[in-house]
Amino acid sequence: MIAPVEWIKSALLEVQEYLRLTGQVARGTVSRPFYVRDLVMQLELIGIGSLTVVVLTGVFTGMVLALQTGLTLDQFGARSVVGRLVSASMVRELGPVLTALMVTGRVGSGIAAEIGSMVVTDQVAALRSLGTDPIRKLVVPRVLAGTIMVPILTVIANGVGMLGGLVISVTQLRVAGSVYWSNVVQGLFMPDIWMGLTKPVIFGFALVSIGCHVGLRTRGGTQGVGRSTTNSVVAASVAILVLDFLITKLLMSLLY
Image (cartoon, rainbow, N blue to C red; front, side, top):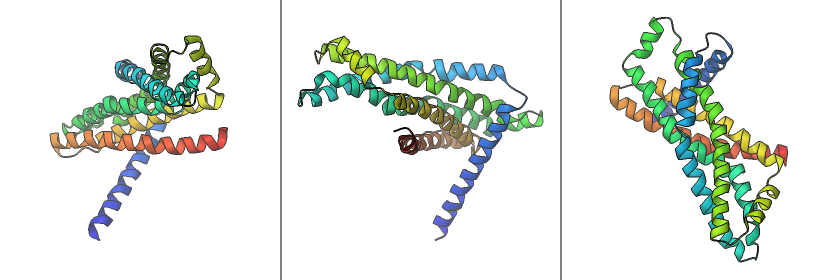
């Protein structure tokens, strides 16, 4: 019975520390000092740095989605409506989730490793000794950049995913491009767009804040940095999937 109790206590402590970190981030976002240069740097690292992997993920997701759904719809003589399924699936679900998971693998792990390395080499302690709040200096710019850039990357992934679906529809399914785009527009409704924009904002905040939290809690030298990197990716990926269900359930009850 000791091990489960200790595990529960440790889990509750992590939740408490994470909530405390989010509170500090909220205060640091609306009060001075503001580290604008660090924010711009993180916007470039998170946004432009993740653009290639997000575009590739969106294109091939749209292509395989059109291919799979087109073959299924063909059994019912409804191949022409493949655009509706591609657009609705990308905007509602696949675009936000896959983009967040890709950014987690690329950015979340890097943030945990970078901050974890600064912790074990006492660079964070040095910031405190110089009178600089490490939360404002290290965490707030990253969290703001993630919250801003993940929705933008999601929109890009949705757009290129629909283009990938267009390529497959025209070349493989023999559906006219005008018919495809007409069904793309008909398959989207305003609640879908709201859902597709709300999810990535929350996902971006969650994945970056988890990476920062795990990085700041790093202990045990270089081995601890490796553990933190792995824990960050696992925790953020699970959080994204859980949040996806909760947000979908909430928004469907409110918007539909």
